[in-house]
Length: 307
Length: 260
Image 1 (cartoon, rainbow over the protein chains, first blue to last red):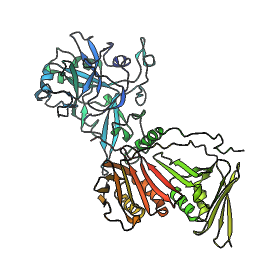
Image 2 (image 1 turned 120 degrees about the vertical axis):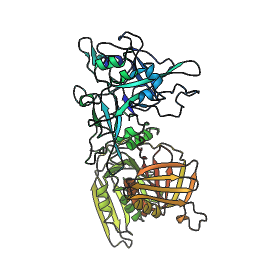
Image 3 (image 1 turned 45 degrees about the vertical axis):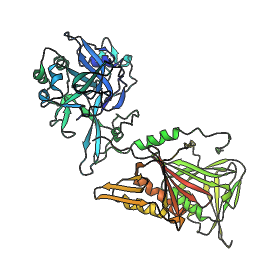
Image 4 (image 1 turned 45 degrees about the horizontal axis):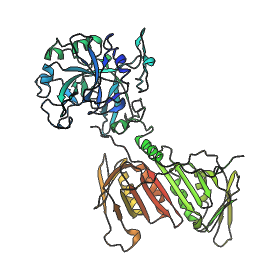
């Protein structure tokens, strides 16, 4: 399952970060036709717009990076609100995708895409207590944990000589839909393809997104010449070198939490639970106190001066 | 010169008992209107605010505003040396390094004084936002203490939900689930034993038992406790200190894991 992502790179930087997995091809950034905006964030649930890579033409260079709505809109959906279709469509099961009522049309139309993010969050069920510990799962980085940060500028990670050296994004295979809204605009929406996980990942969860981890796979996956079930064969079972992870604060469980640093590694206690660091409650308290007007400091000598 | 004399000295003893588990050190801000203390616990999840009004003291003099940083563990040790019926006087010079506590027995036959070093605490003064609460619950303090103690056995947190029918405290954990419901008291014979609810809208919030248990150390101060709640706002647990002030505890609700 994959229902929460971390995606912090800005639209200016993201196309260059994608070159780590598109070969040397830099995708073109395009805004969503319905005006849906991508806002970099470290705690993104379905129904937000996040960057998705897709092929707009027959040339492998015709790569576009565009915000799409997370949560595949069923082609038969009618109504004012694109997300009000009553189905949970943030993930598409790879098993039986070609037979799925929901996805088979999109698959036969080659509407395959790559969902780009810093990584996704997954919750590990802890034995006994019924509680869960979240992890950020992402592509292995050059050194240490991923340094997600919305402030990364192009100059920080890109040079013509070395290419992109900033955080390496994670590429997840997706399937998208183009739906027309009431005012005739195209609404692009997507679902992340998931599969049964294996020994690499099933200690954390029994499902895992289909990962694309090199330019060849990305190229094939987006190749319109490759049809339907043939294309699905590009998605190989998870291998160890595709993913890495670290535990994060349980605060990420609530989408209202958007505090910086939410995606950072935290230490675990013996039970596998994050040790108490600055908790969500503490940030709630400090935000609440900030609402108060500053107290008057009319008397200069309120503090005892120490001789 | 600062001097404050309290005939009912045990009020001060009780105030310290209600603070010392939560705070290790804090500043007492003294002005001609009275004494105030405001501090957050180490984890910054809760805040304590104490007010002792000048008119509640039997003698109160504060020539210049001063802020006395104290180690509360030490202060509590000293106050434990006072008998329950002792008269307590706190004294300090304007630029003093020390504070003096004087304990007099009611018949004036025994006088003890203790001097304690002050600390230079650089604490920022926190403003507390004006808040309209969706639900204000008054209940007997001892009842509240009992509920929190009982439910702490079940889990780390307690859910307080207030509807117009009443207030429900629940906890769940390995051994099972516990629910305690209190209905509004229909007829009030003794005001101190009443449960009253003033509610604008139903509220349900989750709090860490650990802190609530520390707050209930103030149960000895007052017969009634007031809980004020609103969504996404810290809970206020208030105990009156006689008719001279209050201890208010603010506790941020737990932000629960929504994912499943």
